Length: 373
Image (cartoon, rainbow, N blue to C red):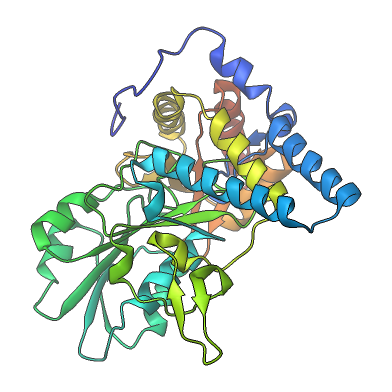
């Protein structure tokens, strides 16, 4: 399988995927191929969230036990996210999105007009917006390793790029870029963490999305900072400090917690913990096999884009616009998305994706093409 990872856990047994699919009610109705935006929510994830909300309704959201329990859940989420990417919990900060994580890093680096940041033509605005707001000169190159490295100069302070491009699904060797350039690397992990094996080792900064491939609640994510003390706290919040003075000076928390900006409800924390726990050890193996199968089935019907190295399958539709095809597929019970401004349709293939889901996708593409003959 092109780009497929080596199996990381227990071998898949007959019936495992079908049993896992029953956790997600949405799969009973539609072919859900949109985890690159939002992953499906499971029954147990929503049940855990409802339980905490009912508890808040009855008992209120106040008191020392409430605060201590919430703090313990925050620490558990940091630990579980750290386990996913091979990082110590002390280097993990909770965020509301990969966008927020990128903003924390770009603001904290204290870049100036004489500094440069190298990025690629295929980055999401969640990263690009933070780059554009910095005073540094942004150097944009095609997403090819040699061109990225060739753009690095003595003024380069950062390479900022995705591990998996949200457009084509191509995978960039970000650890190699760090090693060969000697320049700090900010990795946008929105389309990699949860979809494939990812390690934070060798990265300076890694952002994580909770609501995409991890199938967690909305507005959840994390930022891994290899050396938290070397990044300035550009936007301190109450969570940043251990103690403070009337003039605003403060003693920062140890580790990456100092970068946290938001309170998460116990409902959100419990939901993400359940979602992470439900992810099977064979998730990446099955997802990559399904993505390869998706490309194989689509090959005779569309122009596939990208190298086929990830669980994102992007393509140009025949004889119709991307927006029209996405609506046609939606009406047929197949959920994919259009990539704005690129005339691409993107299918996000997860470990919950069945062969029937893929055939519904291909049938919908074929019927849309026939409709415009």
